[in-house]
Length: 197
Image (tube, rainbow, N blue to C red; front, side):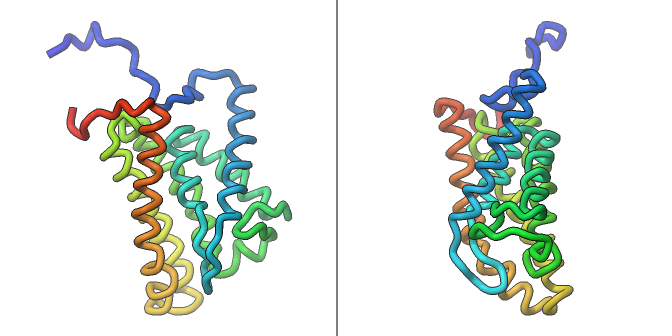
């Protein structure tokens, strides 16, 4: 067993290494992150009352790459843009109405989702360990679905909320989690470690 006194500095959890960058770099990353989140909103399959988008993929990936603090901040900045009227939400929509309607719970869950995935990524659940990265993404998707469905249940009832706001998104959550983990591994250069070192 290696002596802890001689262990090298903890390696960066992300290939972007934003935690080691200047404030200007981090501000630039927030701007690029909000653009990425906005683009993910335009990839949409319209459904009622909640559309299917690539937003959760982008939210979990931002969390994994940026870490829990900068990731949550970036996601919150994107939501502020949407509330302020910029066309960055699902299908290019905008406005405060989305935060009080059926999609409100999912929107408010996004920074929590990004922070959860970022927190796990900082602890090794990242592109270095693709199985753990997949589980982190999956937990993020699940947190978003649970919080969003709870909000929706207050509006339309629990049974309908589960039927229309949870169940249709399970397969998509699995696929987006796998895509997120694969993206992290690709950004790492495909050198993933097993789940248990």
